[in-house]
Image (cartoon, rainbow, N blue to C red; front, side, top):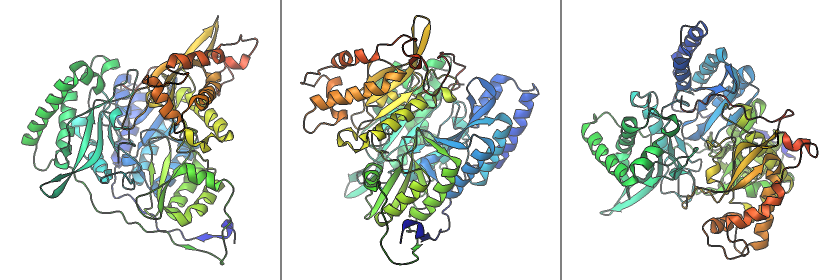
Length: 603
């Protein structure tokens, strides 16, 4: 019997217990678009309205929008995936994009069709409300929460409860700027020090009993200027979670800079005020919130366990399955063992977060047939995770993924770079970071770098401008886009940073040098070659670069300056006559320019 002979019974779909949508918002959006087109709604007011409902502007045009679909805690169900597949084919470009903040984006949607997407999403309980604008954005949670061997308890129910509390909440509708929560499972996952409020679950022993709570970090964030968050206190009991969240938001609402759009994220307030003063304000404000809030103001945390039920499969005849080539490589680089015996979480590698409508449709059935919890979880790395896959089912799953082009290896290695949308759709982008990430991934998989254990824990993250949507500041090797010129001829260029990380030793990368777009791949390969020549026996690329940026390396490469000297010969630009392709950005056949539009991150 071969894999193709295998018949699988499609179990009934698990469906979300939470309906995030309101159908009337679709009707209201359609009416407002009509008024805007008739000139009865001014542009600034319409932009704020549009962003509040999750429709973002598209590069150099007012006739199209990007719809950002929120997946609170990253959860997505098969019927929702099928609906997004359908909407993508009907109203978008036949593909969808998984972001680094557990959203799914549909690009190049005609403005008048946005309300139709809202209606479709509402049918399956999804919303894009407050996915953009100055509000509480999608509440994130590590895709390994609930299955991570290092976690103390599952923070997913708390992330979902937080998302429910603040969605459409009046206190979160007109903040100075966007506001982000990240829940996680342990120190290694979740970027908790790089958001406004980051939370790690903790259990404290008190008087012979255990108490749930969180380690909370405040005031972190990535952007044109990035900051690492500060820990509020040693332990925050779970009953203080909501009070703390409200207190922080009140202070930001009251004291955040509403005039200077470049400095109105909470991290600037914390930095300007100083951590100790901000910390004291939060603790005092929390006492006031605790004393004055109504007893009905609480987080409704659903602790009912998810049903874990392995899907049933029936074979035509007995015999052994044929395991396709590439399975061992995929198993090593795309799966992690769960704390639950005999189960693994499977990370699906996407190219810079992109997935076609037909792949989405197939993915819905794959989740039904292989995930024992019956749903997917989007991740922090522009990917999607299938959890509770029984180890006996992994070869069959790999075969199904192969059939639909979702079986690329390297999901958990540096061969799966992050790349923001860049000039493919963003008004602020200066380079096509999206396409560069894909080029790196294809080349590095061709070189089989995903099989190199020295590179496994490293990361490559690329932004099309300094604003950090590609998270370049916390990458082992990070890039953000800009432009450069030789005489009158311009070319796409990237500032490269080294040594960033977002684990328990969170730190921001240090600037190394500017790298032309068409030299990024040779530069990364040269860094890897230099590492191999200078590494100690137990080094990884990440640990080696970490030592260098902290001044602790004792090989011939002692500083970033030494790395820079090695790389400088590679980045010398040729003349346009010698190499015309050098002056074209990836994905473009026209001369490079740095024209940008009005950004809407702070509108």
